[in-house]
Image (cartoon, rainbow, N blue to C red; front, side):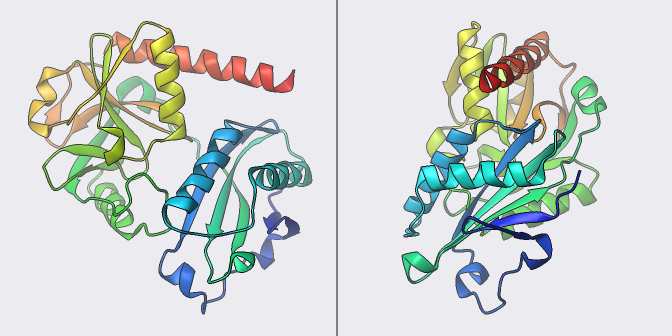
Length: 278
């Protein structure tokens, strides 16, 4: 797989030219938004939803730009065509603000995927909690320092990720994932105004509801983990990952409901790919 090209404002260029000036004050201050799209065999999964969210994110923090959904859509497919690979990779989209709309920068950078260890789906992962509340929880901004430090702390402690605890003491999300608890076939998630409404999250919950699961939004307390059968996280790269341990609390086993949800989502992805080709 040859990821030697990228897109800047719709122009395909060598990846060696993918640079941001150190004088770019908007980038320095995190005045930008981003998305990561999974591409498998030339299919950008949930591309319309990702485009809609980056445009909404830009609007929510006041980035004024000249890009339409159609422009971004075409640029994505132009880049995929230029790469010309049937392999799997990610496209990271960065929309960086500017004082004038015409001076905003739209980067699309292909990245080699990170393939998760298959053992995590069988045995689950370990998470650690940390107190941190993102400034704009519903927006994927470039201001990621708090999440980065939390993730680094988790990895240094031998955990796969950190769960963020807000000022009221409730679990909101992971540093790069959405978080869920499950009891029987009821899935519990933090109120949507407190977290990023992840594209994978949206899709999985839609699949779950169509297959008899019930979705409830509520405050998730770390002290009540024992009231649930299990937990899982979701993100673009790893899809659904069961959670084995949170801090010193361990779930007794990965419940069958989570295993069922993983299978249902895998089947849905297969149908999505087929319908996209057709």
